Image (tube, rainbow, N blue to C red; front, side, top):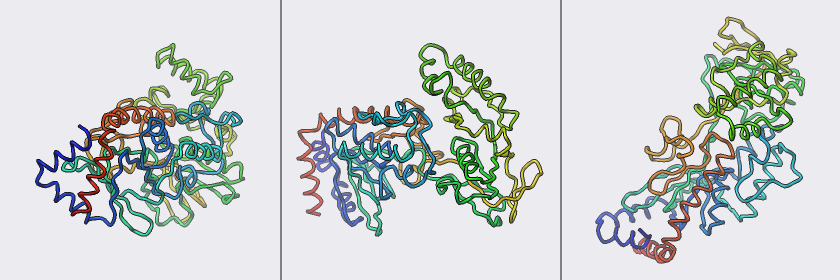
Length: 433
């Protein structure tokens, strides 16, 4: 059904329609009718979706709570960060990396790439717009998205399609630990960690042994700090490259010819030959292979960039889970106690979708991810879409963005001849109430 017919039908058959329009115009200071989709989030996911839509002739509006694109990368990552996968697996649709970029681009190079991407497709997000609520209005037949600006001014966007692009890393996960208020040293999440320079000579406990935790430990070592690493669970550590190529690229190639379990076995054999038995150093491996575990739980294997050598040499100490914090010390579950000057929480991020999206069918209220697993989690009901929730990095983001743009374009073409009439009709209704 096209926009004009839809709006006329509601006017003719729904006695609550005019009352709903009156509520919409009076409940917020400003209201904007968006002919295309509203995209929440100006990270790589939002940019990729907007670019794919623009390439198909569909305009969009991006709402971004920060003052820049890719705020996670620009504001909440450490200085030494590089892409953990080769650049060809991290490109967004329709534009590759510059040929002069290294295989593993730096943080700043990736940000430069994203800014060039936004310029190429003339993507101009509305910055400092924090979406406080988004809800489908069955009376209007559209999404009503409320955002709050820097001065507390509310704005309501009415749209046919809503794209959730806030992703898997919207909010830092801060674990509760007994005695956190008692510890006198610095406790911070990796989102606030920039460099090991400020921890030079200090005893630092890093909690979490994923890629971030491992790399922060290495950075601390390189700045002459004394890091220890809390390993709370089993973990797969793989070399970043094997047999002269990237481990990820080799895995993708092997999966074209062999079943996953054989590829997992191959990766573990080569890793053992290159790295040795990681369990000897406190890094026990899970029972499931790295690729199988990734598919089932989304848990990413650690791609070693030099941290394991520091663990083997004793420059980085491996410690068990924390039992409690004291004023100057940490007590571990094995009964030992050690003094530390600071604690870095490499405990990851989580989705914040349940806090603002009033919808319970597509997204789980528990973890804020689409309920349907990859590759079917990108589309919901009533024009609701999700991008960047695949647990498959930027490659998954690109796949989602392309699918979403193609799906919206099909509706856009059908309704193109009525779009201008719809907008004028809705604006006329708003002004006359």
